Image 1 (cartoon, rainbow, N blue to C red):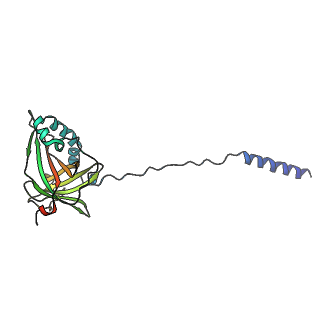
Image 2: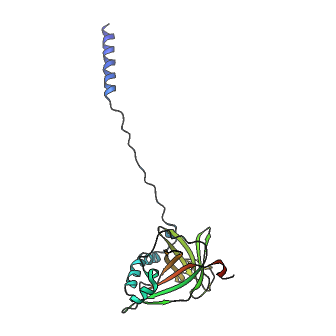
Length: 215
């Protein structure tokens, strides 16, 4: 009888202890998703990445040294802060007017504008392709989405309308820049120069179908 009483008491004590033991803590660990770098970063060379990073600051210096007459004439096209949201371009033919900004060691920045040439934008498996079809300084490459802009990686071609030279094939011909929308049906492609004292800005405006070049 005594042993039975002791056994019952011991079981009651163990049950009480078990009831007072707190449940195990559950620790929730949140894992932040790993963001993939933009596609253009997988291809760009370090020296071109540096040019791209400094493009905005260099552009600001060039713009500050433009005459008020040129600023008024060119407006948002040459203003580094004029980029707008929704930069996507519709595939098709565009008029390309190139404004070349050049700044000597001293003095004001000069702006020389070319006549309207033709460029073409197309959607391909590799991305948004761009090619300058007519005029001097033929260029071709790809536009890569990057927030409110596109990043351009391309190359100066040997002849207008070609796209045989890709970025990285001949580093001396490589081109890097940014594409932004600056108005209704108006975009710009700003291509970094060899140094901070030069910049080429392509004004892109859609061409009506009946006015597009043949070939």
